[in-house]
Image (cartoon, rainbow, N blue to C red; front, top):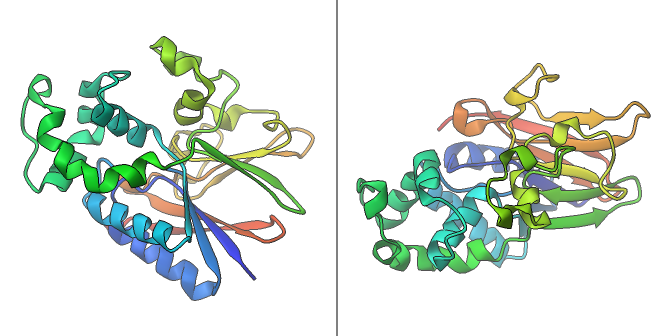
Amino acid sequence: MPITAVIGDVHGCIRTLDKLINEIEKRNSDVTYLSLGDIIDRGPGICDVMRLFKGLQDEGRLEFIRGNHEDVLIDFVEETNDYDYSNWLMYGGRATLSCISGQECYQPVNKIDIKDYKPYIDPYYEFLSSAEFKIGKEYKNNKFMFSHAGIGPSKGLAHMVYEFQMRENYLFMWSRDTWRSTEQYFGYTMVHGHTPTKEIEVHDDPHKPFVNKNKNGELVSVAIDTGCVYGYSLSAMLIDEYGDFDFISERNVD
């Protein structure tokens, strides 16, 4: 039976990702993948993760969602200045620039120039910029809307500083309270990462995804960022051809 494995935030944790994929493929012979983004920044194997996912995409086995970390890198490359790069660099961007260039990114924030790094980013740029903001899939038993962050009841407004971020695509990358949602997204269950499950107040196991149902028992959202880069786990949601699903998680080994 064909399986879609939806993978949460990797953030350069290549050894844990390898372990997760190996376990998925031991259990299933026909697997395609969907990454919910934030594959770069912070962790030790950023370039290896990009190469692995790009290879799967080239084989026609990966769909790729754009995370907020990819979006800031793309903004950096295109010099559209939608973001404050100092925030990106402090929250993991330096690790990505160091990985792609092969040298420590030590310059002060205000001295870092895209011209110094663009030749190193170019081999990955087409892959990163190909990512979708959201992907909807309909199955016999469920309808899912996949995005990096989902859209929570606050619509992400508490975290939006710039007017450009108020557009829907940016909300799909930046919302922080999707787990509080009480209604489906136009009939779709939102499947997202971005907010580690350790930060979900009503969830008691940071190593496991969080399934959010409303009082009527409707499946509203599923959060699968289990905080691998923070020392917890990397998780995948395994969806069969009918839309029924299960989870698999691997503890961080990076």
